[in-house]
Length: 150
Image (cartoon, rainbow, N blue to C red):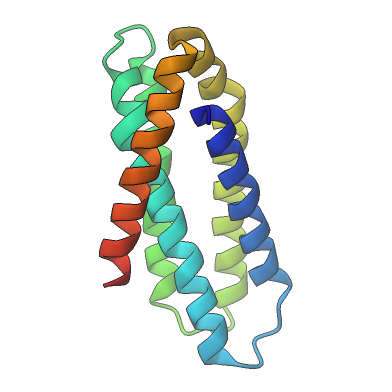
């Protein structure tokens, strides 16, 4: 599969998972907490997988390096927001507003990435390289997820 197609699919899944959390009631705090932690780990693994594959390659091109660095900084901010949110009790009044902000940051990053970075990937790398990125990304993401879950 082409890495751009893979990342678009995962972006849809991430946004869907966040929207599910936003629209779910918190009747079962333990189950809701597990769902949140799962989404947080998947986003973390996704972003770090992107950084280890696509962004590492883009950052080696001096002309597009600033775009890659910006996207990686957005990843860092997102991961920090999600970690901070993990430290808040789900029953606290600030939980939902903080989740809304995290969701907005993720959604904005995805729009920027798909609008600015994905065209660069398509221009900069041929189909074979994009398929190699996909295999490398999938492997890195799975390894990161295993580490996070252990």
